[in-house]
Image (cartoon, rainbow over all chains, first blue to last red; front, side):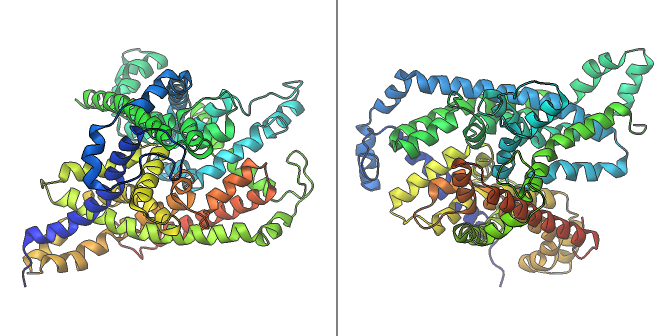
Length: 296
Length: 262
């Protein structure tokens, strides 16, 4: 009753490949198609209607880039894209500044503590992302916990306006993605050959010099992996800018959401999705190349 | 290194404090008798009572649980198959496609995944609701499940499988009685991760759901939009306690060696 090996393999490879092809790759083809169709708020809110695969070829031939022209002519979209990139880059930098000392301290802690510390860093990730972002509202609002404490301590005389500003969005982004920075950096530092740092110390290098010329270069693969894991999702983030940002906080994920749910303009939302995707291809390839360079 | 020094301790306390502060604030406020966030009106379980009478929120909770359980089970199945193919099959046709399709949803912004799935469902004429959200969540969480199972398979000792093979066990028998028990903790971890990700998802569910199928995060989101409600604090605390309970149980099971460890 020997089942042919190839057939057996087909049963293993087939289902996941079929599923992801049908529900992940195919939808992108549809997004692209609708992004290239004309905007017309009808039900379903795009024109022309789905006419089956046979007509797809004829349809593709008649496509024009009208929706993309709308996007490129409207400075809102370009501004939102640039502002998303800027905020994501800032959040990545801040996550590194907060995450590196934490990862370093974790890697320096006694061995028997390290597993517990890793679990402590991962644990918040298991609780609801939405709820954790929402909690920051209670902390940052004018009558919130932070202002309450600062006023009591006499540090400030009137409440700081942090909620609904870019600062709040940055805090939210750093908070949400911090574990993604800490874990790869910790993994790199933990594997690091400590004798190299000791050698630098023996040769008279002061602590800062040791950090900059030995520790950080050796931890580079971890830092790059962390930066990638923070930056890429932060660019398209919706929940954080929506809940913590203000009316003037532009982020592309929020713009897409508004176009889709409030303006019900599906072609426009699809075109924004395509642009966001194109925007992310660059950083993804960039990080991949850097990571390869660091590994070599 | 030689022990924990003061700067390290400061970094640890500050970093972990930053991670846990919002959760602590939320839990504290859920027991606040006052509706106002600024005023501490004394300890009270008032909001938990209000929560139990909030039928819409409870319906959403059950819906989310069903979606999460079903999608996590399917995602674990698909993720295990994908992980076996990627770790064990060497080169095969479609390998590049599979590893790409497994990695892509990880870096894909949720708004794009949600939008593209919705357009697929509309194009295919599927009625949106429970099933479309479940399909969307399977798609999202399969990738995470694959990574978890993959890590388990890579770290596994293959000599036991080889021994079973040498003793004449057919491939399916080797899998069922040797491989599967060994990777079971990985499957459990993958299922739990998929379950929590599904339970937590707002963006993809908002795009792919239909009338009558409002998930818990969608309810919580609209409550937050309407203004901070103490009931949400209570609901959040219960969710946090639930996750903590599951994690503690999982680690106890692993500790007591009820599951084989690798």
